[in-house]
Every structure is written in structure tokens, then in C-alpha cells.
Length: 156
Image 1 (cartoon, one colour):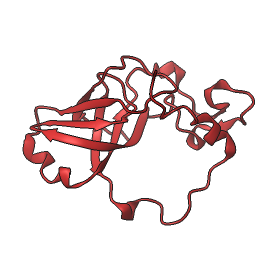
Image 2: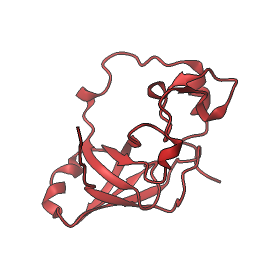
Image 3: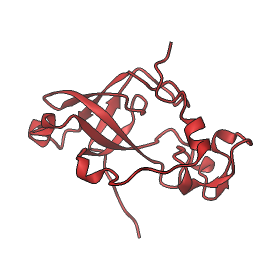
Image 4: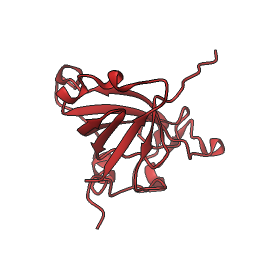
């Protein structure tokens, strides 16, 4: 089965290449493509956060992981399957981030803490609703908390 997806927008950001940490505080702009007008964003500013689905477009297809690996190649963390981690070298190269919506200007959304680089194709944008967030405590292994310690810090 062939599935075709067209970007709904593109990211304009200061970062030109993916890095593992220090995504905190940065502002990015998502500009919708020509197939959309400003009406597509009507009502979005009533929400504090949005979920952005995007393509890791710089990942070389030859570097895709389909099995298990040590996250960030750190052998002190267990080897886990690609679907048990959020690495960019995933089979369909799809990323997802919940970020704060700052403002909307015409066909542009300004967000903070979107961990996507400049030129990233945006596949979809959804408002974050509390009812779609976990309804019970989130459980995760210790290694994933260690991995994320510096992820959302501001770059000095």
C-alpha cells in the first residue's frame, strides 16, 4: 500500500541541523503551504498548546533503524526497539512534539520548544486537549529520564 502525504507547512527555525539536547525556550515559525489560507488556523489561538507532526527530512534512509539499539548509542542504557524510543532514525521518519502556541499571524504559527529544524516539513497540526492526554500517571524507564535531562534546557 502506498500512502502519500503532503506537507501542510514548513518550519522556520534557527537550528539548521538536529542535535540531541538544548531545545528549550527557542521560538520557531510554521508557515502553511499555499493550499491553505488563514481560515485553516481560525480558533487555534484559543488553545495554549499544539501537537506538531513532522518529517525528519534530513535522516538518510540508509540510517533507518527497524530493530533494537542503545538510545544515543549509549551502552549504559539498554538496547530497546525503535518503537520504544523517540529517535529520529525511525521507519517512517515521523516526529511529534507538543509545543506552546505563542501567536498566529495570517498563515504563520509562532511556537516555542518545537524540536524541529529549519526547513522541516510539517505533516499535521492538532490542538492539544486535556482529554487526549494520559488519564493516569505516565510510567517510563529510568534510562529515558536520564536521556531527557538536558533535552529541554536552554542552549547557553
